[in-house]
Length: 231
Image (cartoon, rainbow, N blue to C red; front, side, top):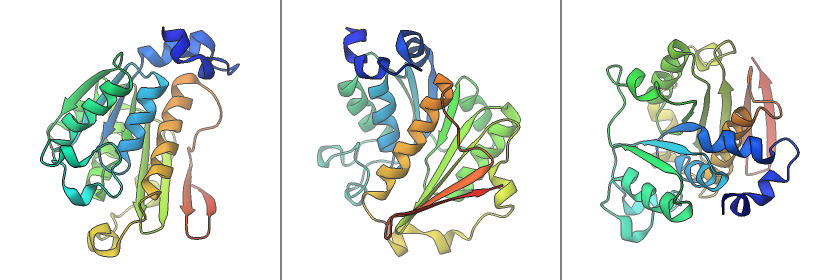
């Protein structure tokens, strides 16, 4: 059954059954199950990542549904981690889903990240992004971090000895200047960036390709322009 499910992926020379086993034994933590976290969770589950952790303290609201594709109208009022768990389980019941309906803080972040092989920061606020970045540096955990705003998206991957978020942006952006609830967000943008975040996790686990380390990738969906800035 497992080989039939992952047949197309295992046909890749760099994956095969050995790579698929690595994925099934891996543990990835997703911080945020909103616009970015939705495609990340669904694609990691589809690819066969064995354990997926979800951190989110919010509940589903109708305003989320424009872009948070893992949630539906029937989920309004549910904790996001529970709504996401249901869709992941429906997609791939072999995946273990650990749910943490908590807000990350300096007090709990190290403990929550400690057991995972790869971290994906998919929250909607920069305070959490810096918190997770700093914890991953302390714990020497690999991290992919993404953000979206209006028509543009950004991401980078951080390994223990590569450039981190604070190297590119020593100071946090003003939250009022990057507030999507004020300035808007194209519905499809989180899907594009979220899929890329999931891809970075898969590449890291499989040991294939070149990760987005020591660089900052940005995409403008209005004009389909993409740039990479080296750190």
